[in-house]
Image 1 (cartoon, one colour):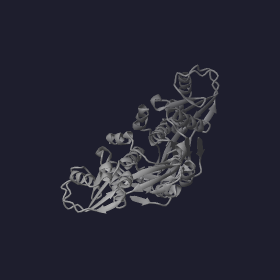
Image 2 (cartoon, helix red, strand yellow; image 1 turned 90 degrees about the vertical axis):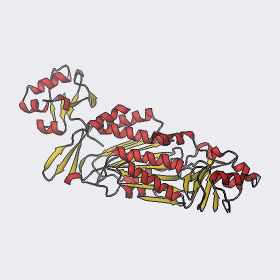
Image 3 (tube, rainbow over the protein chains, first blue to last red; image 1 turned 45 degrees about the horizontal axis):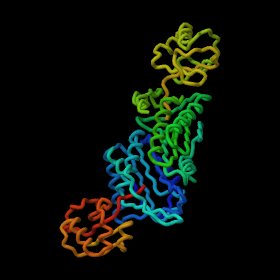
Image 4 (cartoon, chains in turn cyan, red, green, orange; image 1 turned 180 degrees about the vertical axis):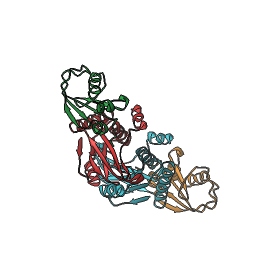
Length: 145
Length: 145
Length: 81
Length: 81
């Protein structure tokens, strides 16, 4: 299991490649990448987090996933700071013997990471800035687990 | 949309990287890689397919996914021939504005690709060969769509 | 009409493809005709619940008509992914 | 005890962190104490349904006790991913 919280960009392709390498015991690898959408003239997305709590929160979410599903490995990378449209904000990856576990665990990680890891997004546009409001749908998504 | 059926290995990391690049209109990228498991002393997995039908079947499955969910792009790569444990058999990738569509479409592609694309797997072991039997669970998985 | 066999059907029948001139009206009729030919066909088609068929490269049922069809393929349930 | 503020709570209160010596028994008591201090605190904590709290870096409820606690953080609902 690897949890990374960093300001710098990460290499999605290289991370996918390394994560999927040497997995003769794992039939399924799922990865997810979150990308900054340039909707409505977004100039930048600024991501604030809670140093000291963030990594622990992500590790706890990943550990919970490992107790719920048969997983060989879990990777979570999340950036903070100022990102431009098209940049990758974060990724998760799961490896499991069977695909259902890999998919379900990746969706679980994403659902919890959205609403239970201490990150906050602020949109920068030509006409000002605005904190992204939490969506009811994201909170509701947790009820399925 | 890109559909590739080939005997040669593919570069999973490079494919993930290229697929996720320049996606300022897509917030979510999901990838799945299938890996040959070395269970029970497997020497090799041989994959037979139906040239002429395979690519059309995969394209039809991908097109159906695009009508069902809001997707920006779909990629399917599937190998045939003889593969060693740990080698990557296939991958799918989906890009969508929102993560639920990307995840659901990727699972749909995998479920259909398992049971409706003309591939057959044969296991090679020290004590002989055996065609992999279709699992009821894979057929049942289609009923959810 | 070209008739193709894949996986264990190919192995049991002993060839991947053959040209067959048949007046069979449906896939089922063609299967009956093949079963009557030789033991290896009868063995391959003994349990049709384990056999799938494609007509002109599209999955089809055993009652699919064969008029105008150029290619029929028989194979076990698919195991891709 | 260190009290931290994130996102718009940080902006509204005007600082990311402060040291507070409080005898508040619970998070709710601490919030009441902060509200009484200055208008900017009252404004930040006007609607607690929009505020989340972590006690010693773990998500907590407003009735969580503060005895022995070293760090309390207030922030809006999280929007990661």
